[in-house]
Image (cartoon, rainbow, N blue to C red):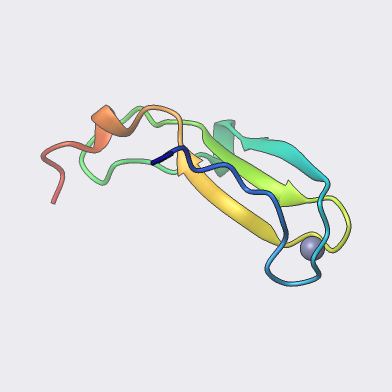
Length: 66
Ligand SMILES: [Zn+2]
C-alpha cells in the first residue's frame, strides 16, 4: 500500500496541474509561544486556485505549544 500523499486531481475542478506556493516572513504561521516561525507551503491547483494541501515546513517547532 502506498501511503505517499500525492495529489493527482483537484477535488474542486478536476484539474491535474499543481503548483507549490510558500509563505514566509510576515505571512508565516508562528507557534504561539515562540518568537520564530516556520514557513508555510501550499500545493495549489493552478487552474482554479484551490489549495490542495497546506503545511508548515518545520512542524517540530510547534511541539509543546498547546
Ligand atoms: Zn482546481
